[in-house]
Image 1 (cartoon, helix red, strand yellow):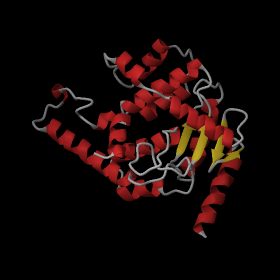
Image 2 (tube, rainbow, N blue to C red; image 1 turned 180 degrees about the vertical axis):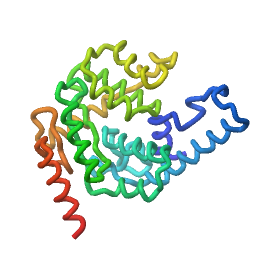
Image 3 (tube, helix red, strand yellow; image 1 turned 45 degrees about the vertical axis):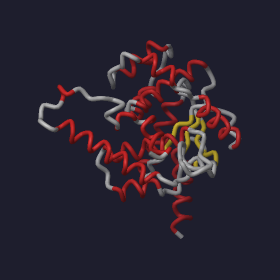
Image 4 (cartoon, rainbow, N blue to C red; image 1 turned 135 degrees about the vertical axis):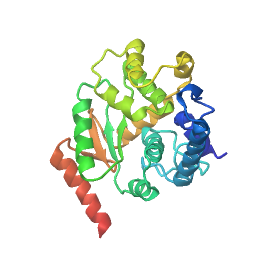
Length: 257
């Protein structure tokens, strides 16, 4: 088993029945559980094939987190998002050509902001809306974890990634106005997924220090001074519809020539 496959298992364990066993009672049809397990394994193999030897889209020049091809990225938000996107697409039944087109886009849009930032929902929605109109999937939140509350939210988001619920829980966190204590955050997750009895064990095993350090490093390298800030291919872009649209269209035009 490659390092990348191990990383995928750890990040999105919902795809592996041994990690997240599914109760037999929810499978009324004979053999349904076995078919589900086969689909999960096939999805894992396909994801590993697609992601093998790909550079991390954070443009650090290294390979995806957990890659057996070194040097590998230290697990920044962008690298993790790349893996989650592929698994989500496979799970939704997307064709391989669609997945590859998304991965091969010359554009990566980063939104630097903590979940606790009061302006995050507005800027995130703007970036997503414009990018969707221009058929750009890779919009990544880069939370720098500047407070204890912000770090709690990051850990909860990564727990949701582990459970295969990252996208929906991330949106909920972005639109959450507080408070940011553990009980409130776990109750928020509980609206979209049942909370495991061993929740404290899982939460305590999630280490986001390297992820936060990498996101903070990239923010400093790009000269970011205020949050939220949008960057497109490492360059700061004003948070307006026109500025984002023009930056994306300029890059697409340059790559079409």
